[in-house]
Length: 452
Image 1 (cartoon, rainbow, N blue to C red):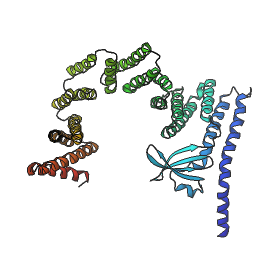
Image 2: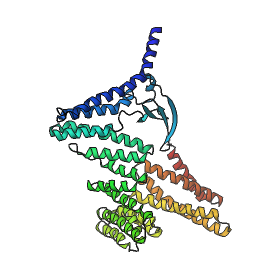
Image 3: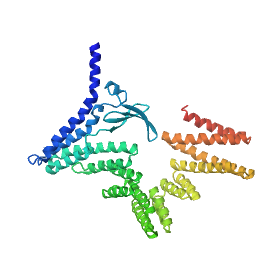
Image 4: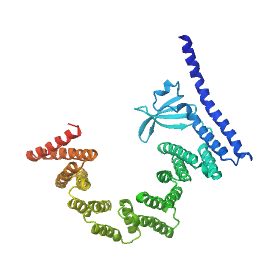
């Protein structure tokens, strides 16, 4: 028994050295393979480049080789892997357990213990993926018949760039995230694989924009359009934002005007393809107002669309959303009501009506809390109660018509709160009949949310 224990301890003691050996051996193999790509006798052979690409991928994987089978934290002890340091960090508002080893950091969900990310600390080469990509690209140039093998390698390399990008994005290293997302996209677009990861390319622009590099974001977004990708209008909207972000650097009024016209141009390109994209419509209307142009033509697009498809309830709701965000409350509520008039089963319309009156009620409530004059206070309380009453029926329709549980849950949550407030208010007014009516509704939706 003692011999077994001693043997186990000996094996554990060798693990860190073995881990370092993985990296050194991988580097030696990669450098040996590199020699074949510079030797005149072998540099013209595609096999030399493919081998170099493979060895570079091995070198990339080497620091993480000892963790290859780890999916949960509990597996580390089974493998005899002991971290040098353990700490709790916050990633995207979520508690994550970070375990630091010689060559890598591992991030686990603090509750489930599931592995979320791996981070290399001791990379064999900082640009191993780029070198691997270059090697396979050269192999394909030398022999297009290697297309299948090269395409498979590109898919693998693109995926690794994508994983790196996700880690950097969630840990707020946004400049690195942008670079990695862009590399993932460019590798995926390269023949013979030639399957552009459009989402990765767009994500590269998002990360660049969030990092404050609007010029880089703009460059990538234009690249999206060159590849024929516009994400149903999101690319045009993003180009508007990154262009507008340069306004503070305008030297004079003429430069500011030029920037506004350029950003408006992106929105006009977008609305030509997606006339009902709410984000584009709202920004274009605001931009036209800034440039002292008539925004009516934008609303004319809705009028034309409704004439062509008068029973399309979503057209009325989308226009109402736009008007609501522009502060045109009366027109907005009229649009929402029209949407359920043309289609009584249009759930979103009922939700919007209920939410409109709920928000209005909360506005009256806030005003009442700040009012010292008793008469004005009472008037605001009555307006608050009237608005609450008006949101009950549409929220109940939303609850009854919706088939998705999430929608029903949202409706029930609003109704539970609204009906409790109405029950309390009417009880204070000694209106027992109405108080009981809303008490029953409150109990009904409260029971639903509890699963009773």
